[in-house]
Image (tube, rainbow, N blue to C red; front, side, top):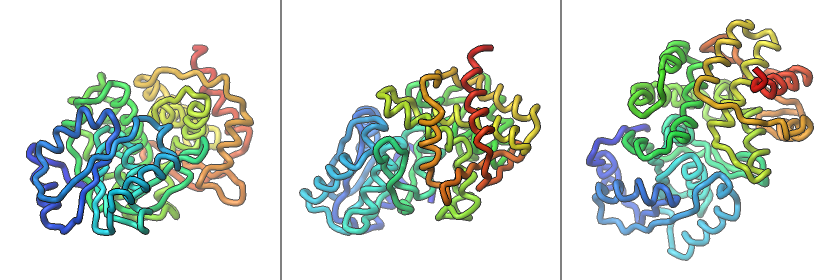
Length: 348
Protein backbone atom coordinates (compact mmCIF):
# COMPACT_ATOMS: atom_id res chain seq x y z
CA UNK A 1 0.00 0.00 0.00
CA UNK A 2 2.92 2.41 0.68
CA UNK A 3 5.07 3.28 -2.33
CA UNK A 4 8.19 5.46 -2.23
CA UNK A 5 8.04 7.59 -5.36
CA UNK A 6 10.99 7.96 -7.67
CA UNK A 7 11.84 11.37 -9.13
CA UNK A 8 9.55 11.05 -12.14
CA UNK A 9 6.55 9.76 -10.14
CA UNK A 10 6.21 6.81 -12.55
CA UNK A 11 4.47 4.66 -9.92
CA UNK A 12 1.78 7.32 -9.44
CA UNK A 13 1.33 7.70 -13.19
CA UNK A 14 1.01 3.95 -13.62
CA UNK A 15 -1.68 3.92 -10.93
CA UNK A 16 -3.63 6.78 -12.54
CA UNK A 17 -3.44 5.26 -16.00
CA UNK A 18 -4.47 1.79 -14.88
CA UNK A 19 -7.69 3.13 -13.37
CA UNK A 20 -10.72 4.74 -15.01
CA UNK A 21 -11.28 7.79 -12.84
CA UNK A 22 -13.84 10.29 -14.11
CA UNK A 23 -12.06 13.29 -12.59
CA UNK A 24 -9.28 14.06 -10.11
CA UNK A 25 -9.54 16.54 -7.22
CA UNK A 26 -6.24 17.52 -5.60
CA UNK A 27 -6.63 18.81 -2.03
CA UNK A 28 -3.88 21.15 -0.80
CA UNK A 29 -3.34 23.91 1.73
CA UNK A 30 -1.56 27.15 0.87
CA UNK A 31 1.82 25.68 1.86
CA UNK A 32 1.61 22.51 -0.21
CA UNK A 33 0.08 24.53 -3.04
CA UNK A 34 3.24 26.63 -3.15
CA UNK A 35 5.95 24.08 -2.40
CA UNK A 36 4.65 20.64 -3.40
CA UNK A 37 1.90 21.01 -5.99
CA UNK A 38 4.29 22.26 -8.73
CA UNK A 39 6.39 19.11 -8.25
CA UNK A 40 3.31 16.88 -8.44
CA UNK A 41 1.87 18.61 -11.51
CA UNK A 42 5.27 18.69 -13.19
CA UNK A 43 5.49 14.91 -12.96
CA UNK A 44 1.84 13.84 -13.21
CA UNK A 45 1.07 12.36 -16.62
CA UNK A 46 -2.61 11.77 -17.19
CA UNK A 47 -5.37 12.72 -19.59
CA UNK A 48 -7.89 12.81 -16.74
CA UNK A 49 -9.32 16.26 -16.00
CA UNK A 50 -8.32 17.60 -12.58
CA UNK A 51 -9.22 20.44 -10.22
CA UNK A 52 -7.29 21.98 -7.32
CA UNK A 53 -9.07 22.39 -3.98
CA UNK A 54 -7.26 24.62 -1.49
CA UNK A 55 -7.91 25.20 2.20
CA UNK A 56 -6.03 27.30 4.72
CA UNK A 57 -3.26 25.56 6.64
CA UNK A 58 -3.63 24.64 10.30
CA UNK A 59 -5.39 22.29 12.71
CA UNK A 60 -8.09 24.91 13.27
CA UNK A 61 -9.33 24.23 9.71
CA UNK A 62 -9.99 20.54 10.47
CA UNK A 63 -13.66 21.01 11.26
CA UNK A 64 -17.16 20.31 9.97
CA UNK A 65 -17.40 23.75 8.34
CA UNK A 66 -14.39 23.06 6.11
CA UNK A 67 -15.66 19.55 5.35
CA UNK A 68 -19.04 20.99 4.38
CA UNK A 69 -17.41 23.50 2.05
CA UNK A 70 -15.47 20.71 0.35
CA UNK A 71 -18.59 18.53 -0.01
CA UNK A 72 -20.39 21.51 -1.60
CA UNK A 73 -17.50 22.14 -4.02
CA UNK A 74 -17.41 18.48 -5.03
CA UNK A 75 -21.16 18.63 -5.62
CA UNK A 76 -20.95 21.85 -7.65
CA UNK A 77 -18.17 20.34 -9.76
CA UNK A 78 -20.32 17.25 -10.31
CA UNK A 79 -17.89 14.78 -8.74
CA UNK A 80 -19.30 11.29 -9.16
CA UNK A 81 -18.49 7.99 -7.52
CA UNK A 82 -15.66 7.35 -9.97
CA UNK A 83 -13.83 10.54 -8.99
CA UNK A 84 -10.48 10.42 -7.16
CA UNK A 85 -9.32 12.73 -4.37
CA UNK A 86 -5.55 13.18 -4.03
CA UNK A 87 -4.63 14.46 -0.56
CA UNK A 88 -1.35 16.35 -0.96
CA UNK A 89 -0.26 17.55 2.45
CA UNK A 90 0.35 16.86 6.09
CA UNK A 91 -1.82 15.27 8.74
CA UNK A 92 -4.62 17.83 8.51
CA UNK A 93 -4.95 17.35 4.75
CA UNK A 94 -4.83 13.54 4.85
CA UNK A 95 -7.25 13.36 7.82
CA UNK A 96 -9.64 15.91 6.34
CA UNK A 97 -9.39 14.77 2.72
CA UNK A 98 -9.86 11.15 3.68
CA UNK A 99 -12.92 12.02 5.75
CA UNK A 100 -14.50 14.13 3.00
CA UNK A 101 -13.84 11.47 0.35
CA UNK A 102 -14.99 8.54 2.51
CA UNK A 103 -18.34 10.22 3.25
CA UNK A 104 -19.12 12.02 -0.02
CA UNK A 105 -21.77 9.98 -1.88
CA UNK A 106 -21.08 7.28 0.75
CA UNK A 107 -17.47 7.08 -0.34
CA UNK A 108 -15.26 7.88 -3.30
CA UNK A 109 -11.67 6.77 -3.80
CA UNK A 110 -8.74 8.74 -2.43
CA UNK A 111 -4.96 8.46 -2.22
CA UNK A 112 -2.55 10.16 0.17
CA UNK A 113 0.67 11.88 -0.86
CA UNK A 114 2.09 12.93 2.53
CA UNK A 115 4.36 15.96 2.49
CA UNK A 116 5.38 16.17 6.16
CA UNK A 117 7.30 13.75 8.35
CA UNK A 118 4.24 13.45 10.60
CA UNK A 119 1.99 12.39 7.77
CA UNK A 120 4.58 10.09 6.14
CA UNK A 121 5.26 8.14 9.31
CA UNK A 122 1.86 8.31 10.92
CA UNK A 123 -1.18 10.27 9.80
CA UNK A 124 -1.44 9.06 6.20
CA UNK A 125 -1.06 5.39 7.20
CA UNK A 126 -3.77 3.29 8.77
CA UNK A 127 -7.07 4.41 7.29
CA UNK A 128 -8.12 6.74 10.09
CA UNK A 129 -9.85 9.82 8.72
CA UNK A 130 -11.38 12.56 10.79
CA UNK A 131 -12.15 16.09 11.85
CA UNK A 132 -12.19 17.86 15.20
CA UNK A 133 -15.45 18.62 16.99
CA UNK A 134 -15.44 21.80 19.06
CA UNK A 135 -12.00 21.45 20.67
CA UNK A 136 -12.00 17.65 20.79
CA UNK A 137 -9.39 16.04 18.52
CA UNK A 138 -10.54 13.67 15.75
CA UNK A 139 -13.95 13.17 17.34
CA UNK A 140 -15.76 12.54 14.05
CA UNK A 141 -14.32 10.28 11.35
CA UNK A 142 -14.23 6.94 9.58
CA UNK A 143 -12.00 3.92 9.23
CA UNK A 144 -11.33 3.96 5.48
CA UNK A 145 -8.12 2.88 3.76
CA UNK A 146 -6.77 5.07 0.96
CA UNK A 147 -6.36 3.28 -2.35
CA UNK A 148 -2.62 3.93 -2.13
CA UNK A 149 -0.06 5.99 -0.24
CA UNK A 150 2.70 7.54 -2.31
CA UNK A 151 5.58 9.02 -0.28
CA UNK A 152 8.16 11.35 -1.79
CA UNK A 153 10.78 12.01 0.92
CA UNK A 154 12.25 15.00 -0.93
CA UNK A 155 9.11 16.93 0.07
CA UNK A 156 10.60 16.99 3.58
CA UNK A 157 13.22 19.45 2.32
CA UNK A 158 10.45 22.07 2.07
CA UNK A 159 9.57 21.80 5.77
CA UNK A 160 10.37 24.31 8.50
CA UNK A 161 12.44 22.72 11.28
CA UNK A 162 9.50 22.77 13.73
CA UNK A 163 7.42 20.63 11.36
CA UNK A 164 10.25 18.14 10.97
CA UNK A 165 10.66 17.95 14.74
CA UNK A 166 6.90 17.51 15.13
CA UNK A 167 6.90 14.37 13.00
CA UNK A 168 9.93 13.01 14.82
CA UNK A 169 7.79 12.63 17.97
CA UNK A 170 5.70 9.95 16.27
CA UNK A 171 8.85 8.13 15.21
CA UNK A 172 10.10 8.14 18.81
CA UNK A 173 6.73 6.75 19.87
CA UNK A 174 7.01 3.91 17.35
CA UNK A 175 10.34 2.89 18.83
CA UNK A 176 9.12 3.11 22.41
CA UNK A 177 6.03 0.95 21.85
CA UNK A 178 7.33 -1.62 19.39
CA UNK A 179 11.04 -1.58 18.52
CA UNK A 180 13.81 -0.89 21.02
CA UNK A 181 16.46 -0.85 18.29
CA UNK A 182 14.52 1.80 16.36
CA UNK A 183 14.32 3.92 19.53
CA UNK A 184 18.06 3.55 20.11
CA UNK A 185 18.83 4.50 16.51
CA UNK A 186 16.65 7.58 16.75
CA UNK A 187 18.10 8.88 20.01
CA UNK A 188 21.58 8.47 18.56
CA UNK A 189 20.77 11.35 16.19
CA UNK A 190 22.64 14.39 17.46
CA UNK A 191 21.10 16.94 15.10
CA UNK A 192 17.64 16.67 13.59
CA UNK A 193 17.55 17.31 9.87
CA UNK A 194 16.22 15.57 6.76
CA UNK A 195 19.52 13.80 6.14
CA UNK A 196 19.76 12.35 9.67
CA UNK A 197 16.10 11.29 9.82
CA UNK A 198 15.72 9.90 6.29
CA UNK A 199 17.31 6.45 6.94
CA UNK A 200 14.78 5.74 9.70
CA UNK A 201 11.52 6.76 7.99
CA UNK A 202 10.84 3.38 6.38
CA UNK A 203 11.13 1.59 9.74
CA UNK A 204 8.57 3.89 11.31
CA UNK A 205 6.22 3.48 8.37
CA UNK A 206 6.58 -0.31 8.59
CA UNK A 207 5.85 -0.35 12.35
CA UNK A 208 2.68 1.69 11.88
CA UNK A 209 1.54 -0.40 8.90
CA UNK A 210 2.20 -3.71 10.68
CA UNK A 211 0.20 -2.70 13.74
CA UNK A 212 -2.70 -1.45 11.61
CA UNK A 213 -2.81 -4.67 9.57
CA UNK A 214 -3.18 -6.67 12.78
CA UNK A 215 -6.04 -4.53 14.12
CA UNK A 216 -7.65 -2.17 11.61
CA UNK A 217 -10.62 -1.13 13.77
CA UNK A 218 -8.54 -0.54 16.93
CA UNK A 219 -10.03 -3.27 19.09
CA UNK A 220 -6.73 -4.24 20.72
CA UNK A 221 -3.07 -3.82 19.69
CA UNK A 222 -3.65 -0.73 17.53
CA UNK A 223 -4.47 1.11 20.75
CA UNK A 224 -0.74 1.02 21.57
CA UNK A 225 -0.24 3.67 18.85
CA UNK A 226 -2.03 6.04 21.23
CA UNK A 227 0.85 6.06 23.71
CA UNK A 228 1.54 9.72 24.49
CA UNK A 229 -1.69 10.80 22.84
CA UNK A 230 -4.19 10.60 25.69
CA UNK A 231 -2.61 13.46 27.62
CA UNK A 232 -1.03 14.87 24.47
CA UNK A 233 -4.37 15.30 22.70
CA UNK A 234 -5.83 16.99 25.79
CA UNK A 235 -2.99 19.53 25.86
CA UNK A 236 -3.25 20.06 22.10
CA UNK A 237 -7.00 20.66 22.39
CA UNK A 238 -6.61 23.16 25.24
CA UNK A 239 -3.96 25.09 23.31
CA UNK A 240 -6.23 25.14 20.25
CA UNK A 241 -9.21 26.29 22.30
CA UNK A 242 -7.06 29.01 23.87
CA UNK A 243 -6.23 30.35 20.41
CA UNK A 244 -2.58 29.45 20.82
CA UNK A 245 -2.25 26.16 18.87
CA UNK A 246 0.87 24.03 19.11
CA UNK A 247 1.99 21.44 16.59
CA UNK A 248 0.69 17.90 17.03
CA UNK A 249 4.18 16.51 17.61
CA UNK A 250 4.88 19.12 20.26
CA UNK A 251 1.76 17.98 22.12
CA UNK A 252 2.71 14.33 21.63
CA UNK A 253 6.17 15.02 23.09
CA UNK A 254 4.48 16.41 26.24
CA UNK A 255 2.25 13.34 26.27
CA UNK A 256 5.20 10.97 25.87
CA UNK A 257 6.92 12.53 28.87
CA UNK A 258 3.79 12.50 31.06
CA UNK A 259 2.83 8.97 30.09
CA UNK A 260 6.36 7.60 30.45
CA UNK A 261 6.33 8.96 34.01
CA UNK A 262 2.82 7.55 34.47
CA UNK A 263 4.09 4.15 33.31
CA UNK A 264 6.63 4.34 36.16
CA UNK A 265 4.03 5.49 38.72
CA UNK A 266 1.81 2.55 37.71
CA UNK A 267 4.71 0.13 38.29
CA UNK A 268 5.05 -0.86 34.63
CA UNK A 269 8.62 0.38 34.07
CA UNK A 270 11.50 1.27 36.36
CA UNK A 271 12.30 4.78 37.48
CA UNK A 272 15.63 4.57 35.63
CA UNK A 273 13.93 3.62 32.37
CA UNK A 274 11.42 6.45 32.65
CA UNK A 275 14.22 8.91 33.48
CA UNK A 276 16.28 7.88 30.42
CA UNK A 277 13.24 8.06 28.13
CA UNK A 278 12.21 11.48 29.40
CA UNK A 279 15.71 12.95 29.24
CA UNK A 280 16.09 11.82 25.63
CA UNK A 281 12.76 13.34 24.61
CA UNK A 282 13.76 16.59 26.31
CA UNK A 283 16.89 16.71 24.14
CA UNK A 284 14.73 17.36 21.08
CA UNK A 285 11.72 19.27 22.44
CA UNK A 286 11.74 22.56 24.34
CA UNK A 287 9.54 22.93 27.40
CA UNK A 288 6.02 24.25 26.75
CA UNK A 289 4.32 25.92 29.70
CA UNK A 290 0.98 24.27 30.58
CA UNK A 291 0.60 25.83 34.03
CA UNK A 292 -2.41 27.88 32.89
CA UNK A 293 -4.42 24.70 32.26
CA UNK A 294 -6.44 23.53 35.25
CA UNK A 295 -6.51 19.88 36.23
CA UNK A 296 -10.30 19.75 35.83
CA UNK A 297 -10.05 21.07 32.26
CA UNK A 298 -7.45 18.43 31.36
CA UNK A 299 -9.54 15.68 32.99
CA UNK A 300 -12.66 16.88 31.17
CA UNK A 301 -10.87 16.19 27.89
CA UNK A 302 -9.35 12.92 29.11
CA UNK A 303 -12.83 11.65 29.97
CA UNK A 304 -13.93 12.29 26.38
CA UNK A 305 -11.03 10.32 24.87
CA UNK A 306 -12.24 7.89 22.20
CA UNK A 307 -10.53 4.89 23.87
CA UNK A 308 -12.60 5.18 27.03
CA UNK A 309 -15.31 2.74 28.08
CA UNK A 310 -17.91 3.35 30.83
CA UNK A 311 -16.38 6.76 31.62
CA UNK A 312 -13.08 5.13 32.61
CA UNK A 313 -9.90 6.61 31.15
CA UNK A 314 -7.96 3.95 29.23
CA UNK A 315 -4.25 4.56 28.71
CA UNK A 316 -1.69 2.86 26.52
CA UNK A 317 1.48 2.75 28.63
CA UNK A 318 4.99 1.38 28.35
CA UNK A 319 5.82 -2.00 29.85
CA UNK A 320 9.42 -1.64 28.71
CA UNK A 321 11.43 0.14 26.04
CA UNK A 322 9.93 -1.35 22.90
CA UNK A 323 6.78 -2.79 24.48
CA UNK A 324 3.39 -1.38 25.42
CA UNK A 325 0.16 -2.37 27.16
CA UNK A 326 -3.29 -0.98 26.35
CA UNK A 327 -6.61 -0.45 28.15
CA UNK A 328 -4.70 0.31 31.34
CA UNK A 329 -6.73 2.23 33.90
CA UNK A 330 -4.74 4.48 36.22
CA UNK A 331 -5.48 6.10 39.53
CA UNK A 332 -6.56 9.73 39.23
CA UNK A 333 -3.77 10.67 41.62
CA UNK A 334 -1.12 9.13 39.39
CA UNK A 335 -2.53 10.88 36.33
CA UNK A 336 -2.45 14.20 38.19
CA UNK A 337 1.06 13.50 39.45
CA UNK A 338 2.29 12.74 35.93
CA UNK A 339 0.93 16.06 34.64
CA UNK A 340 2.43 17.92 37.60
CA UNK A 341 5.73 16.16 36.91
CA UNK A 342 5.81 17.79 33.48
CA UNK A 343 4.73 21.18 34.88
CA UNK A 344 7.75 21.16 37.19
CA UNK A 345 10.31 20.12 34.58
CA UNK A 346 11.12 23.75 33.85
CA UNK A 347 12.07 24.29 37.48
CA UNK A 348 15.27 22.29 37.09
